[in-house]
Image (cartoon, rainbow, N blue to C red; front, side, top):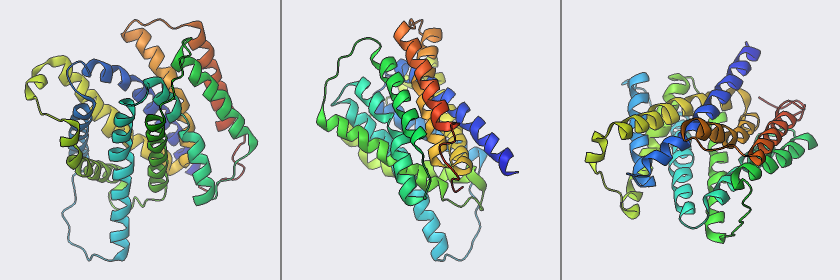
Length: 304
């Protein structure tokens, strides 16, 4: 049963990365009519609605004890880190630094996850993981800059991006240690989005949010928001949480290397953007780095 759950975990991670890689295309289309914070708000609203329909809250009365409160604080912290802070830090970082910088710096998430898991979860790592990380990072840099190596350091924006990577790691650690006895992972994901949306509401006025409901009468806007909210958020956060819960945060985070590769393929198919030789070489390096990190016996006997 454990091996079957792990197989499902790998399949869930692959599915998640495939959809997340495509979400960049929908976001690019929506940015013509919406600001980043507006896209995020509508995305979270739709995700929470979909998760509530799929897993309605249980209206049961039970005695509130310390264990219940501790569990709820973990879910709230996961919502704050994985939804509110992660997306807000990304949005603010993009106003201070290049999108290419953000893309590359977020790719350190697997490394951060490995280091934090080593301390918190006592995961055992071997040299192959770090070698795989280096190879994959080289591929990600080739794809991101795509022959135009214009590296412009912006300390504030780059620092905010690294903080976004760190809060995502904290989110993954919280999900790994979370109990799914009451309602399963679907209920946990619903609660995560509830708290994520709740914590984000005070920040909306600071980013110039406006409802602008007339934009929701445009069919492409509706379809892309539905894809981001229901597919890219509700469904994918559930499958990602499932993968983290059964594979552990380190093994699951390695799949994030694939996001840039999926994005360039989707861009070629949907936006008719060309795939350059450097992007092809970068893709090969990413796959090689993943193989070294994921299947190269890099974890020893990790604790699941």
